[in-house]
Image 1: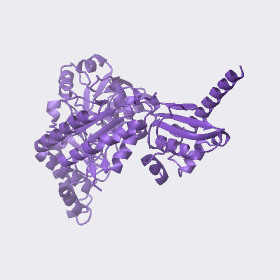
Image 2 (image 1 turned 90 degrees about the horizontal axis):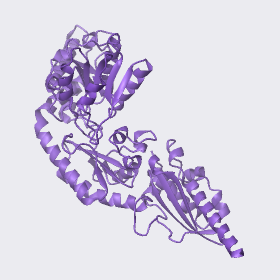
Image 3 (image 1 turned 180 degrees about the vertical axis):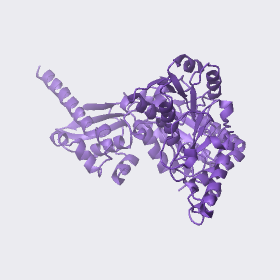
Image 4 (image 1 turned 180 degrees about the horizontal axis):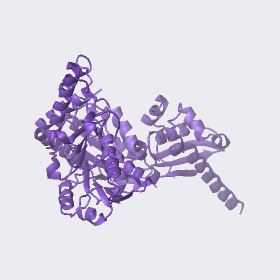
Length: 130
Length: 392
């Protein structure tokens, strides 16, 4: 039911873990529904220098998390914001239809991490101006 | 790669002896049992011989055993057939909240027709209380349907006690049990259980898929499920699946002969598996009753991880198992059984069911115990819910 690419990412997930001094953290999903993704980013000069994830969920949830980290590592914030859930699924060679809604949330988690980064940065900039 | 099949509550392989018994009925003994000439008589007597074997396994009269296309049909027939034939007496049905979907969805369907259904709760082990059944009875109640043992968590329900209590009433309420998981695994006797209807499936006892039976006690008022020809004493129309029925008969005969030996072997392996998992892996919950459970059933929840990921990892190691997570239940909800015993959603998603069978060995159990802790640890190390050192 899963593509080879999905199984490959599921078996050898990239960038698993946490970044203790992350610049942004994004969390989406809900353990009640069976999926929870947490993405950590480290940003330097507007570029995602490092990215890590932790995911509770099914094969699709883990594979999409792994895939999204691989897709945006080294990319600018603006480029990363253009990555959609669908693009992640496509990069994995597609997902079973039932998984498209419930488990395909990795790009959302990434965007949440970027928003968190932007919020923190804004606060920091304001503080510095004062 | 080493393969270990531990999903026998899902299905079992057809035994060699069963297949051999079936084969002639596809080719040289191909007759339609409703015909009068030699081939027809040959098929007819093969069906009757199988009926005797199935009846013997459950302590019934062969005339009370009706072949169906499987457990789901038997459940549908029992419930719809009783409901429709007895609706003048009342339109209330009592069942439990942990029944198989073949029972639950049938009851829900009858609700749309105006029947009222009581779905009894269960305790933390999945047990239905006899007094809850009796307290739910109204003047309108025509049927009680409670499974003999639960297919997911393996808990064996107090069917004989419920049967006894129902008999004390001054009017007849039909009693059905879905015994798909118990027949051939533990002793099943329709009189000792006090049931009027009992569902069986062949493919859970090393018989073929697509065959089952419904036991219907003599004198039970029930509508036929299929209308058409006069097969099965005019109660279940349609040309009989002769090879399937013959295979079912053979499987029933073997199951009865080997029941106690298998019971002992399977319960030993089950206990070793449960103990081994509990000893090797932290944050595990055993689901179902610790002792009043099917001899081949192990069901546990691993906190902080999700069932489908677990199954995929086990599959990569050649181990076939099942889970009650949302992904494997085909809906967004985890198993209704695990929720009914009071597990929170996030824990129910992390369930694993291992069901043993006659081909499993102690080495198989050792292999699972060797592989499982690493898989659980790997998934937990990826889980944001797992309380790790320095995590948040």
